[in-house]
Length: 495
Ligand SMILES: Cc1cc2nc3c(=O)[nH]c(=O)nc-3n(C[C@H](O)[C@H](O)[C@H](O)COP(=O)(O)O)c2cc1C
Ligand code: SF4
Image 1 (cartoon, rainbow, N blue to C red):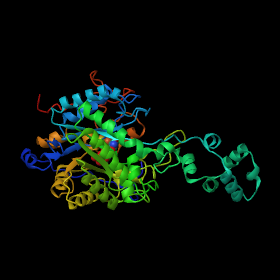
Image 2: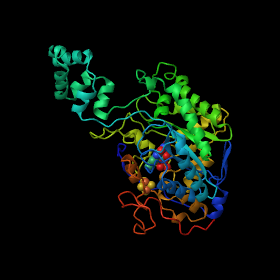
Image 3: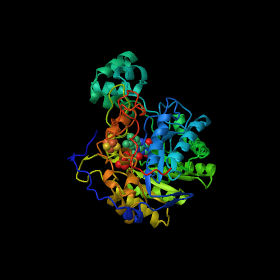
Image 4: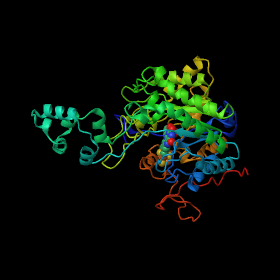
């Protein structure tokens, strides 16, 4: 796990939980409209991949339990994890790229409606992503994948100060490359070859020489629109278009997007596909279904988009008619840690990953409300443009006074709490009922995120060993962890 310079373990926020009356009068527990949908309260469980779908991307009983457990805490909204919009093998990533996924997704919606007493609104995050391969052994990369050409020969000859590489066989050339050190590789290989050797092959939206990447603007609007239509058929209240982190649509928004086909370069070019996707989705689902997106207030990578760009994105999405804007930060491939041979690069392992899910091993700012200033700036830009689109903020939000002051100060409209809700899915309900001291407080040390990183079933260290021997408790594949938080025994029975 990457840590900021000067990182020390920082204390959790001091708590001052509300009384029942304070909670009843708070902004946090007041309703808010997102276009056609009203949230009963401004509490939001953002998308979190729990790795519980089947290898074919189907809903499982464990996945249903995971979301039903969040809904039992009656938040205003739950967003179902990043869900793939294509009908292609994607490992155990939840999918919505074909009608055959409808029955599983409908079961999921029904279970959440029941567990949330009809109070919790349910969204699903729609994602597209490009290929990322595991880091290959150098021998395999150089001999099997690398296409040797005259450029390699010439650069190798210049670097070694001999003409031998100019007439060497491909096999001998590969041997020379493999015998070389980092400095030689840096001179001889192109940027993308070097990255494939060190990190594994990874596609980028700027790879216009690859036809399927070049054609993304022609393909994606329809794919997102069909996925959104399925979400509507399955009974969701809306969709969150995933325009954040390390995935395709964030790649289009990024300042690093230098596509020359009208879908990159200027801010208008970078916004073009995200707006066309939104337009296609809206046309497919109509006005009675909520459509919003998640995007980054800062990519936190060299040359990437900053908060000024994010302000422009927010204004453009609001003016286009999106029903909500959900903000995040970082989570990019560009600064990710080098994976071990045989493993794939993971976008939450570098500085930008830290900013996405900050821990208590932090600099002086600490993980709490860390992203709020930038998020508030985006919201302000949207309001100054005359748009009232609600803004969901997130990042280390976990305490009543903290989140209430964000809402009252107009820094955000809805409180997204991912890890605190995983630590205690009943934390909103407990606050509301004056039971704050019973809240299981997230430690922000990212045990859950480490599981996510390894694509293992995500659980929380604070509860995954509780009553493990109870035969009714569903456990992880290795049997060592329970899969959902224990029930809140003290909760009033709301039927
Ligand atoms: C296990 C795990 C899985 C996550 N999966 C997603 C995801 O699918 N989509 C997404 O936009 N963010 C994802 N996130 C990021 C969270 O939604 C959230 O933005 C981040 O954890 C910061 O909020 P927090 O401090 O309240 O945890 C994930 C976070 C965790 C811990
Ligand atoms: S595992 Fe740690 S960081 Fe994750 S939710 Fe639980 S306490 Fe928080």
